[in-house]
Image 1 (cartoon, chains in turn cyan, orange):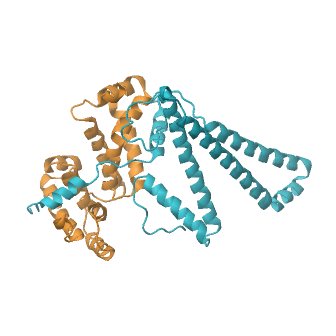
Image 2: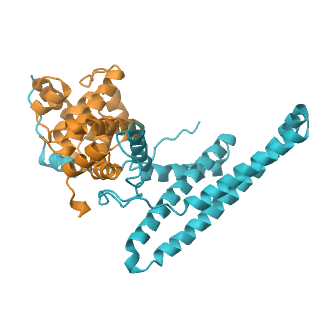
Image 3: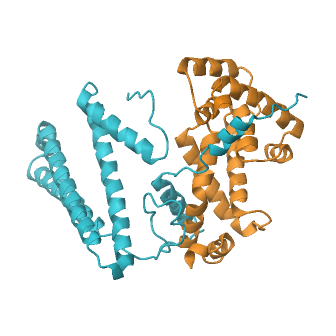
Length: 210
Length: 179
């Protein structure tokens, strides 16, 4: 058996300097809690989604039962877009024969898709504006309403994370549509680096998109 | 105050009431350390570390009622994480102590990459070296503990550490000597 190679003081110090913690991705906690709720280990409703960037000082159970305000405008906007698209499609299919409808949908597919993208984009911008107003309201909350302000801040943080996620998804799809578009790839790369940084890792050194 | 709630009290709430908030509190208190540990074991592969994290915490929650508190909660969860890592290695068809055939390629990659820091060097080590080095030099486990946890003789752990440290020095060249 070989003898151990002893560490030098410099090596020991280097090991001691290594970080002992890394922030796991926000969604991981939700994934785990959802799995435990669905298999009956946990009862739902007793806790709140994690406030981004609140590790690890926020390890006490947060108060329960607060609904996040940003969900309302986002949900309403998304519902309206889907409802509108469904009504338009149903109307078209009901008004003409199947073949005509199919041809009409096929011919106008790109146009209607572009319209839907525009509508979704408008809804996204509206939701961001609502989020911005919520941020202002949270900042102006009186000092006695610290808990309310804290919950508003938590909602805002989650809204920000959701918005960044949507932005990343859109950039990714754009890059798939136009792999040669250097500007889109730059945007995607910036978002990717930010995402990696938020997850606690280092930016990928050699990224290959496709 | 909630901040002072002990791990044991939180675990009790999870076991007796299925208390989601208590589970989240336990998770938030210990997940960063467990995640860092897993990230090191898998050589920085975030997707793999996340999968192992999920499996670790599901198993911890399911096994909480059987935990006898003879060790700290974090040690217990970290042990589960290590078992999950071993299980992953088994599924991939490799033994944790297996290093042959990987080492020269790793050194060649490091040489071409230029100077690297300790964390990066840990990532570059073959899994067999990395595991023992992380458990001994980062986590502070003894060879007996490592042997018990990895299912290897403590002499194997010692020789593995010896080779791992030499490999680490080769990766880092003189950087650590100057630290």
